[in-house]
Length: 126
Image (cartoon, rainbow, N blue to C red; front, side, top):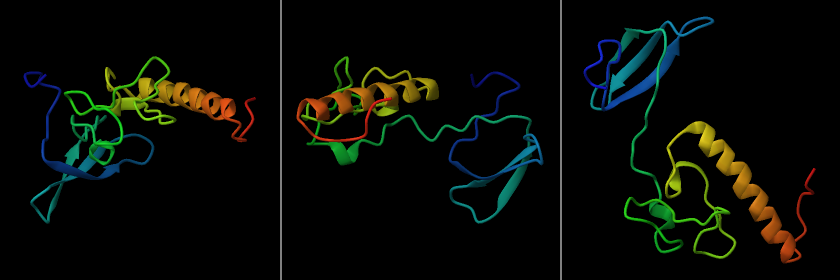
């Protein structure tokens, strides 16, 4: 990807704003070690906030894999009873928004079922 002329990787920068009235016309970025920002002309952006899942708060609570992602079964249940994981923090996640959204629905349905099986009254399924 680094060799494509229409893609510029700007590592270590913070997006301050996306400029444009009705469409992307530019992006204002600031280097993480600078006080000043720079406006970059652009017609589209893809922001990646990192490739390391932020699962440190879950260490010792649920089982993590070698990439520090939460291990889940087919219902997205973790090794801790009643705890479900969804999206990019789970093992084998393809790191895509649409998958994270689908995971959220799947995990919510299974969590609801788990609670109902234990007699915990919660929101009704529609």
